[in-house]
Image (cartoon, rainbow, N blue to C red):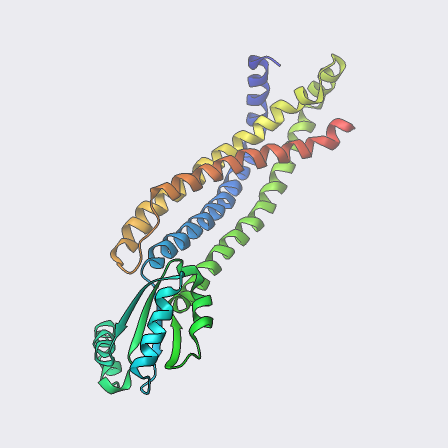
Length: 290
């Protein structure tokens, strides 16, 4: 089909179903915005994880009864362990001073702990912080070891919190996708019914099903494209006003950058176009067969 007749059919379809097209665009926008929010939350999880991996350590608390020979043997074993790249000893007093620094905003907590209450410790830097679980298993229960603490485990509640929001966003996107597909299906069937005479004439002159499908699929793809662009605009607005605006004041963790926004925006636009066109093709299958 030549571009001019195709554009004419496309404009006719959009004009006849303007209200339905607007409803499809709004629904697709909400669906893709939820999808984009889920992608950005996943990007934030990876950003936090990458930032903290280089700072987290495994802490081996030593017993008060550990002998110098036991401590030397333990450190020697750790230095030989290829999974450990650094071993640093902290006396009980140094551990207490660190505790006071970490909890200086909670004087009541600090007041309840005396210098002798905290054991000396070995702080381990790992070649791969994600393998901290193996280190915990290896050194727990060894002579002179009171406990082995994996700092990465302390962040599990944060990761669960972010994962819950991510799953929620994807679930809302899936529910909204069902409404989007239903609207697209209805829009295409109404448009096809309104142009049934043109379709019959095209069949009589030998037009293929692909040629007949083209204007309907383009009509749906344009609605998906507009919805994707609007959803991408919402992601940019969220980055500007929320991430770089409201949340920029916090200094605990780094926030995802613009590259995550552009990547998520490209995904939602592509999904909007392809999913809308695919749904239009599905809606036309029975119509063309009849």
